[in-house]
Length: 339
Image 1: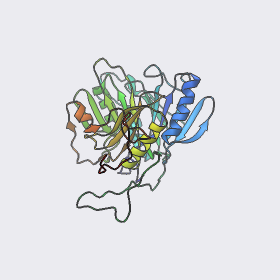
Image 2: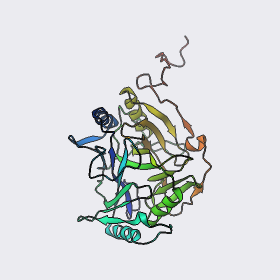
Image 3: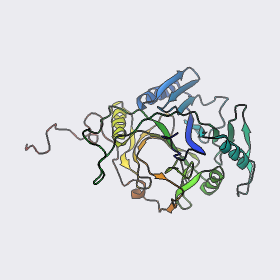
Image 4: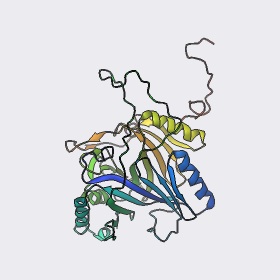
């Protein structure tokens, strides 16, 4: 896919689908339905056992009941992520993944290497955290969607046209998954054995990994915190540009959903973000304008800290009606008017 995460066109393309499970209550089930509708996903199916949602390029969000027999054991209590499906661009990569899962990858135990292959060629296994991951030929489609051009000094790209203003977001893709890990070194080795490439690190504490050498900055981030068990941190959805990050975040605010942090900007990946609390577990992020890397990129080491995570960020978000921080009144007057 030319507009996908893997710009090389071979290997693992990105995330084809994610599956959440709820807490089992009808309220949570109904809140989830309303949340993903407000988030901007397209509803494909909705019955007593499953909700099925889709981004513009065909990446899917599946929601199931917590005791669904088709799901593996959860990696943490409560609503959470239960499965990640990774889309692959070619059969050669699928064969390479199966071969890797059949071979040692430098970790003392091989208990994570049990896998199965379905009749349609999908490879399923558990990662070192017990999360089910699946590899399949990617089902995502070309969209032709482009974000708004920008006019940085000396490189004018937008002429005789204003930048867009979005009333809400319509996510194009599922961008990345972030997990709390209690075994980040082992997990990095496991994912590297499958073809993932390390982009940057917090040594011994966290690792950013991309699907292929030529890809977006990260498709997977593993974060190890003291006394923090395995679990879901957040899932990011890619939107067109920074303007859609703002438009989507303001819409979610108007709908009554709670901001965790944002809008803001990550200096490590250069991406703009806005995080919300997700009734399906963890956080959820609008994300745009991340770095694209090639095999020339050299992984960097960072010391964790607030300004490394966010160059800038608005705590508590923006009110969708006033367009200002919550509880800050808007006068409606121009800033140059004397009062």
